[in-house]
Image (cartoon, rainbow, N blue to C red; front, side, top):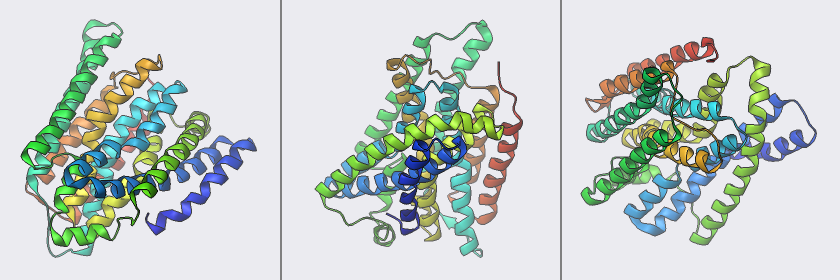
Length: 364
């Protein structure tokens, strides 16, 4: 695990102590959020170590499956507590955070280090991810159009059917990856890039040196710890947001989402600084694609079993934000090159959307 994040593990006992001492929700939320960041990174390291024993294809599938496990765990606990609106907005935040802030920060960091030339990457992978994201955005629009046109509350079956269709599309993208041996989604794209010697050396600097049983034990322990920290986090986020004056949508988009994706963004920036833009974009664009096609449907299914009304009826501003972000990213990555100015554009767009979400009134 990255040394810079290792010290944050100290916040696990701090968060537990603050919770048992019944301290303010802001302190509990902040401590548990800081504890989740290294746990998410540690889960990624354990997954990567296991992937080494499975080979490139099945190892990539394992990474793609468990790459979003921390976010799913956090959101399931939030659903259990009835925080449906915050969970829905966290999906929007994960897509925007990875697509704009994560990718923008990566492009900016790589461009500042090498300002006299563009950084290059495979445009085919970027175009496939952008196309998948556009289709997922359409899936998010359909329930909102249904509600607006009929004036009725959407039926749970409609959301379940759309979630099933998106999940099938995700599985189809994995099959396409295996049959064509051309990774197109998330960590699978990074896995293909690792076949090149230069990139493999850069990635191995971050890879853990664990055996199979050790990796399995760490993965199990981290999952349990994530469960405890997620319960503290979701229990404190609502009162903490009210104390800070944040709306549930803003809290989901810019608090809960960034906690679950901080480790991925950190890795993307590290790869970008090493001039490994294929790996960096594979993480950021791939993570957004997985949120739309995998995490969203899984949370809808979880809401069904938890008897929570988890649906895809997002606000108009959330849908427009995702749609515009996908179009901007598609335009900037179409040529297979990036620079620091393009990265700054994405960061500024993320900040402007943040202002909009902050001043957005609570929907009735």
